[in-house]
Image 1 (cartoon, rainbow, N blue to C red):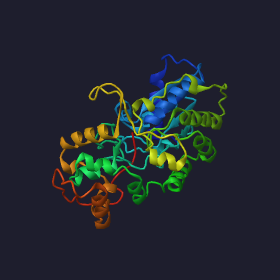
Image 2 (image 1 turned 135 degrees about the vertical axis):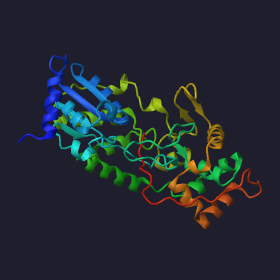
Image 3 (image 1 turned 90 degrees about the vertical axis):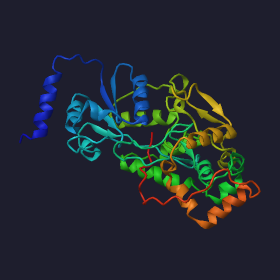
Image 4 (image 1 turned 90 degrees about the horizontal axis):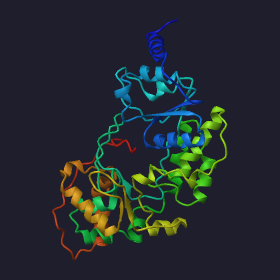
Length: 354
């Protein structure tokens, strides 16, 4: 039985007649930053393939309706998609897109144990993925630094909070099991068992640049896994030797030395800032430089924009407020008045990311 969707897709296929298609197999990758890196890895793994990438951030401009994207997917042998898609005019979602017979989901990798202080600031729209504010490390912010700023602490006081007793009090050493459980859930969402990968990744040390930006070998393993599931052979290849690490080029949050010692991995007190048109060339920042840059960034923004559910929870808990005051040092007067921020409703942050 013909439906509106099937007629629409037939029209799209007819429009493709005569257009040059090269490479085999033909692979379409759809998604956010992790998917973009996967498309690049697939091009290296399969030099004779045609690998095209559609960014989730702009997909609905090129394909106003999800049925347009599904019709486009008809022209490929394999389609790999992350779960994040924009809002389409026909109301289509990833649940509908994943019913396409050629679509396999790319498991989203989010792992917070190595970077427990990293948060996103702002209220992110779960569909458009917009709404987060940028700072000296892009969308990545320090919960401790934001708390110190909102509490009116000086920069010197903020730096005192980067200490093992504070990390212990905040539970920063206790996130491994929770992070593993969450990652397994993301794998199950994509019908992809991540346990074997996780064991191998952890043996190499910290496998994340931030909570949602993986290192190259993680993306490479996922690409190989999806090709295997799709029955696509690929040659053995040491991709680490020559493929640029795109996600690392977007900046890398340090594994604080105290956290690194806890997990037995290399640590760093330097923040690696990516090159951007607005902030200039790539460089590293010490903790003091990072805190100064973050304070300057927050000074330029209205306080109501500095939203973090975690930080608000700390600020609304008297015991935590008192702990921070003691840890920061009472002898230094606050440089700005602290204001109580109303709590957000639970679940108001989408938590993705770039």
